[in-house]
Image (cartoon, rainbow, N blue to C red):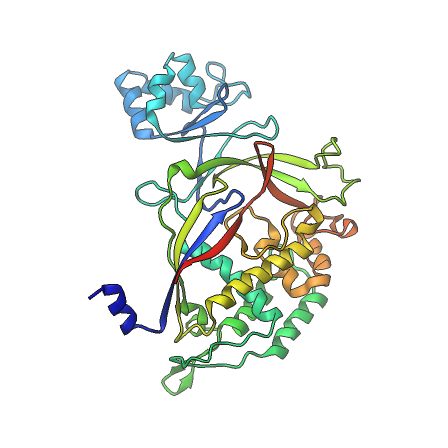
Length: 412
């Protein structure tokens, strides 16, 4: 007996889908770490970065009697003996001074990639991509589920959506539409707190109303609705992606594209044709074209919505992002299947501010950003777009959008 067939007979309420996200732009999912300048070699002449296996590096230096000098170089506050062109320490400068050839240090690499620089910005720390125990990049299921969660919240609040007619394990609470509208009204009229809070409290209330639909009993007492055990998202399971190859990694510099409304913006490049600003922030990313495969499992006894509803939610969320943000930059269209994944994709892809507030969203978002990022967003409302930049990636005369991908069903 095929174990998969047997399993499906035993658990018909579990619906399994093989999904794929194709990176249209560079996608960064960070592991919270930064590569320091002694952990990689930046070959400026060939514009290439070599990420080192530090065990191999230190073993060679110890074997050649150079480890002590290297430690002295790292720990010494003086920069006179070894320094690169931007007057900062890095391992490459040390290797040049010690006459250690490229043939030797290239054998220390774990992986390498070209670097595309928009402007002559120095390369400091690199935000690294999450990797598994074998050192291979992958996308955690939690990152994909977070993307779905945000889109689903916006969709269920903004549209009348019917759940499945299938009999579930639990009974469901009725979604209180009046309370939802009351929260949205309170946000529009309310005071914006400082400290990067934005919609945090209100979003929490909305998530309780929208997702905590399960009616569970603790003995004879109905479980408190705010308890996470009441969330239907328990029935939305997303597994980690298949491991990817180190060859799928690239290095992307953060470049901000300004909207067409910023003619009087002092931060815009003097070249009117290129309203961009490069920032000295670099991240390891999945290069455009990378295919991310993962399994999505719906437990119909807990989660009352179908895969079609999830895909519709993602499309709706992208439409809102386009209408209230991206159209100001002449960027992505409302094509079906577009999703926004990972860090650095921009404010509107990570919040429900615009889908919930829509036309009033500009006032809210500009006020939130102005209070948390002084001197940068005080004119957003006047210019008609907030935030008034969007992150892009420039490579081979092509402009990509950070975090942009296309999702599709591969097998059910």
